[in-house]
Image (cartoon, rainbow, N blue to C red; front, side, top):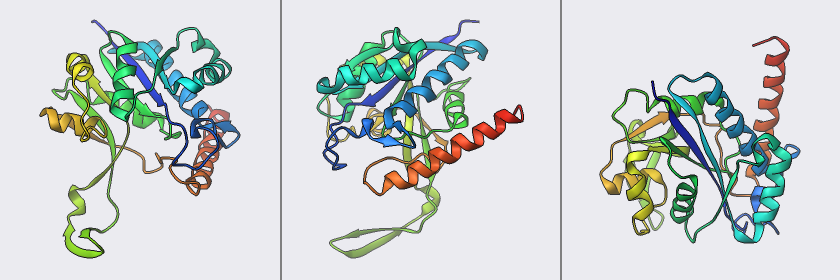
Length: 252
């Protein structure tokens, strides 16, 4: 059986303006590590596990999409964080939009069976979520898949401070990353002109009329956007590290 290669594109091309930091937020310390280090470790370990234990998939490329002003710092961090992958890591330049950064990363990855795109501003993704995302491509007709979280809140639509209508939360999901797509879409994805609607891979798939699978993920897969998010994410990361340590002690 031919194993499909899985390539990961890590988006870390921001400059930190919205976050209000004096440097890109991918270098902001979270639970004693730069935020980017969490994604590097998580996805390199995942690719190693796929390579050694998955009958359907194998490890492909790992691409880090960086702002050109911070490419040297990003590579230095990767060399310290995942030394076994440092020689294989591919660096790509970030684009003017998230979509263009994703396109640059996919192009740099080369030929692959599945392309997985992740925003490194989301430093915590459980291994089970990554496995579930990949499972969407096993014996499936889906060409695109994304982690999502069902809404737990009552949601309404409004305009200029006034209520317009309530929304059925049974059909509302918060979109997370990583997101992934099959190689058959690679030519169209990399050649299509950017559009304002292409805010993420699901919106691209919607505009292209492609079938996309929504994969339920963890609500703890949070994005570092505002300074107050840092406290929550640090608690999540420290607790995850603690639980992993306890599981290792008991051989789980």
